[in-house]
Length: 283
Ligand code: PAF
Image (tube, rainbow, N blue to C red):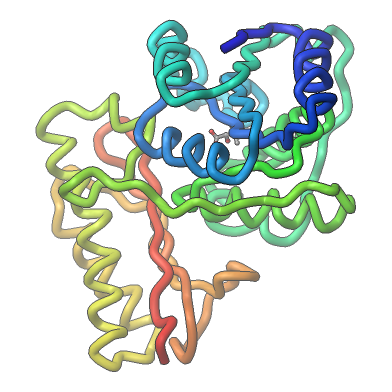
């Protein structure tokens, strides 16, 4: 497994793989790799013959009061996990490589960026779309793999790919959960044992919503309220939002008469966690 730090070296390594007839899969990450990332890598290895993992804590997607500086950066551990997982190439650039002096071009995806995370984290998706487009143009993968825990991010990337006619297949990969249901996230490492326990309210809330719909509830506000009640009954949890939305437009729905996405963002102490579940598919 090779580790490259520059776009030039990345391009050379990818070109060599392509010249051998390999198809390139890209797994974009910010490092602090967990089982969820490893499932993206696994999927890439199933579908493509050369897997590139990017490890880059992207400053432009963090707000001024967010956790950019304290975001975990265990590079050696990550590299070892990649090696064991059979990754072919790690791209781990410095900030100056991605955003050189004078950098001034950003990608603004409209529509699906405005609500949910977009409303609470202004500029977040502009930073995500910009760095992902830069990764796409540097790697030119056949496919790129994104986890469904960041469901809105997945929709933003899909929209960018459509709107800009990028010739890249976006492969969604289901959320990977701990045995007790907590969605894997690099930010789970911030939780102390008490907060870790409290964080289970996210998954509990999603399940309560699903059970209500499975039992025949069709009023989206009733479903939303049931999920919110679960979050509000956990003393360490402060909800940013609990929403029942259309899985494509991410706009709130009134009636659960087909698949809907229940999405939530909750602060547990100083840690902000998100999770979601697609429900109501069978009706
Ligand atoms: O999901 C993430 O880890 C990041 O948002 C991504 C896609 C790697 C862009 O920095």
